[in-house]
Image (tube, rainbow, N blue to C red; front, side, top):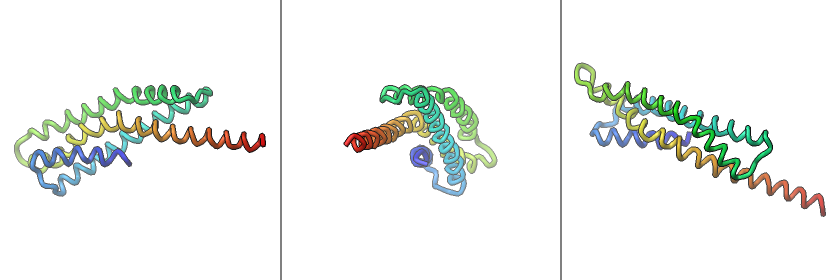
Length: 156
């Protein structure tokens, strides 16, 4: 859910830059953008968790292993994410430039999606792995502290 504000910022910025008022059509575009953004974040976390679980099952849980797992998980998502963004932009940019019947409404639906497709992938490729690193480091330190405390208590 943390990916939603960053994606919505891109959509709102493009609405502002194009001088579109927030209307029902713009809200529909923002809702569609929220769905894609949530999918980006969930899939990225799934790949990061999977890469880390492989390292843990192999018995290696150092900080370097965590960094390698994050790199591996994030790199596996670069091409699919780039393809998703390219397809969405390729489908929406003609709508943004179109003229004719109904184009004014469709432009207001497409604008938040185009703006969000610029910020959402950047967020999920840079911010989500960094947040995962911080979260996982804190959790691993806590596990080691508890294990040390139990060991120390058992030896006393």
